[in-house]
Structure formats: C-alpha cells, structure tokens
Length: 268
Ligand code: 1HE
Image (cartoon, rainbow, N blue to C red; front, top):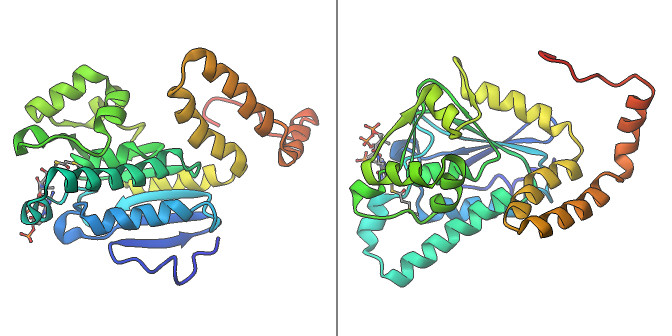
C-alpha cells in the first residue's frame, strides 16, 4: 500500500497503514465527539475516492475518544444559517462520501463505540461490517433537534432495520444498544472487549481475499440490490463471469481440488 505523505495529509482524519493492505481511518475530532463538519466530509470523499488506487485492501473506520460519531456538526450548521440550496449541497457531499464507501469495492469495517447517532449512524451504515462494543449505542436524534436525516438514513438505516423501526427511532429518539442492536441488524458483532481489535482482526482476514472478489462483494451486492430481480440475476451472472474466472483464483481452486485447502468447518 502506498500511503504516501499526500495520502496522510488530512486534518480531521488520522489515517495509518496497518500491516499488509489495511488502512485505519480514524475520525479525529474527539473534542467535538467526531461531529461531521464540511471539512471532514470532504476528507472522507478524498480518501474513499482513491483508496483502491493506493492499494488499500480493507479499511477499519473508527473514531478518536469515547464516541464513534455525534452526527452532523450542529454548531457549524447553526452558525452557517444555511439556505435550503446550501444544505442540499452539503447533503449531496455526504452522499458522495458514503456512496464512495458503500459502492467503492474496498471492504470497510466500522469499529463502533459510544454514540453512533444521527449522521454518525448514517456514516456507520455505509460501512460493510459494523462491530460494536458494550459502550455503543445507536439513535436518530433528528426528530428532537427539529431537523431530518440527510446522509442516507432513509435508505441504509431502513434497509438494516426496516422502515417502521427507523420511523420509531427518529420520531421518539429511541436508543438501541447491546444484543438487541445486533438482533435488529444495526451491527453484526458485539464484543466484550475492544471493537477496534475485533474490526482489525476481521480486516486482516478480509484483506487476504482476492481484491476482485472483495470488489464484487463490496460493490456489486449493493448495486444488485437496487435492481429488479430479473436484472439483478442477469448482472450477477455477468459479475460472476468476470470474478469466478479470474486467473488469481486458479491457485485457490486447485488447492481445493488437490485437498490442500482448508475445509469449511464450524468454529474453524
Ligand atoms: C458537537 C456535537 C454535534 C457534540 N455537533 N458539536 N447529533 C446529535 O444530536 C448528538 C449531539 N451530541 C450529543 O448528544 C452529545 O455530545 C454526545 C452524547 C455525543 C456526547 O456527550 P458528552 O457529554 O460526552 O459531550 P458534550 O459535552 O455534549 O459535547 C462535547 C463537545 O462536543 C461540545 O463542544 P464544546 O466546544 O462546547 O466543548 C459539543 O458542542 C460538541 N459536540 N456533538 C457539534 N453533533 C446530514 S443530516 C444529519 C443529521 C444529524 O446528524 S442530527 C444528529 C446530531
């Protein structure tokens, strides 16, 4: 991975290389509970636009301090006293960043802790895997703040937990945490210890997959889900035609045929 000086030149993100192909991207405004201001969103656009090209094979996305992310920078928003036109364009940049994440083909594992609220939940929902710890809690406080979601919650959060639960969360400010959050689909892993350690373990494992396979998993599945069933089946066949015949897969298939590859076992 070529995380050169330019790649590291971020103010609100702390980006580090961890081992072979894993980048750790940390929201780095702990004093503001990692609230998402315009500058942070632009840095997310910048990093996730070039992650694949600079050789990143998996990302751990985390936040500095005790909270993953407190959502939209409400103070910046209040001070800017934005016009509808201005805020629409703010939201379009959020979508640019989060679509780059979800559709970019580089696996992103979010290591969650503390508040994952509002736009913080929208950010987390653009990752491919979410790991939470015992301190993590999810909420959509927009209803109480007199605003609405603008970073994709109506798409991704309702996709994860269903429209009715999302409406309840935003109407009432309901907070989910612990096993209930996993059962609902807000996260896939709940750990006793550090969500960061678990996310890193997953990222290292995932980075060992073939990049084209990971690209299909972390791009094609989202695109296919946006299509009609007939079109998705057709497009899935096309993607599989490319991915399942890639030369790099030959050695893995041969190892299975020769009985040297690991078998699929429970607890293995
Ligand atoms: C912030 C923000 C923020 C903290 N924007 N500055 N999001 C929310 O409604 C959540 C708002 N935040 C909170 O409820 C709490 O801050 C937390 C539960 C996350 C953390 O509490 P705590 O006691 O640790 O911190 P604090 O004392 O509330 O805040 C510490 C500092 O962070 C303080 O700044 P300071 O300069 O006075 O020290 C806070 O102002 C600052 N801070 N959260 C700006 N969100 C595209 S639309 C998306 C719509 C949404 O995301 S709505 C959800 C907004």
